[in-house]
Length: 432
Image 1: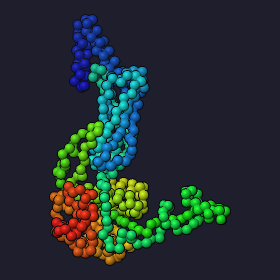
Image 2: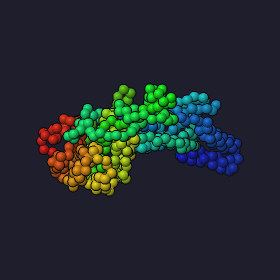
Image 3: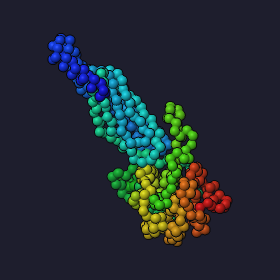
Image 4: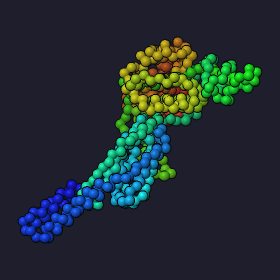
């Protein structure tokens, strides 16, 4: 573009000098010609991006690793002048999301629509937008760009797996200890009746008591007599390990997403990503089995999601895990000691960690003596290129704490199954 512009202005200057020196009409006509070209190109460029409407619609503002994100973009020419070409450039920071497009020959009153489907490969909170709209004249002399600052944020949840089972080997369980806690959910455990309050659902009205007392009476319910489940995700940065990107990737991971063909996405070879996926998988499993689940993480800071049940609770935990980063400075043993007085007795604590020093096992034993039932999921850092102390899983079993082991490349659903637990407990020695 700059070379063309220099050539045109150079020819204009040369013709002007020739006209002034020779006085011939030919040079004056050429001066008028080049001036007309420059003026027409300038006016064309000025009107090129006027009265253009850009639309952007995303089906959902939540996605998940391993699933596609679909976005619909449109450009409409609302003027009476056709647009020769338009370049729509997208500045989203979602990895692999390419929504930029060059639109050619957009007639007056016409609209161009395109759909972008991207496979989500990384968890986190990402930005869709802003956009820029660029156009120019047919001679390629000038270009003009209009920036559209509007943005939308999308949350990509971590990858989860469907667990066939996750039997908690906790002796007196599975029933748990009886709890007496009022809840706004309708359960099978009726606790009593009370007066109707605005906002109460009509299906909670107790009609016999309403007829007897001549006013609206509703039923109260208690949670099922099951103890809470806490998922504790360790984010100590000193315990993390990872392999270079691309190692462990399966064939076909880099294939494009065509219609009817979905590229396979695997977990990055990192203890952080495997631990987050394990925590998300366990949260999904227990929520779908109507258990009361809470989440506690030690990453950049302490994050806590109080125990609850239902899909709304699962959404809260997945959003917390989506932005989790294992950059904490608190070692696992210290974190367990801090939380020892905060966690209620008879709760089940599932520790997800890649720490393989045996010191934190003493803190886990202390929690067990305080009345908590403890389970551990150890993500083996040695399989991710890190260093591991030998015997942590065996030490956990010797302390009466059930432990699962997950290695790089393992099927997480299989690694957390009951069969894997029995194999690791009775079928041989652990590598950790």
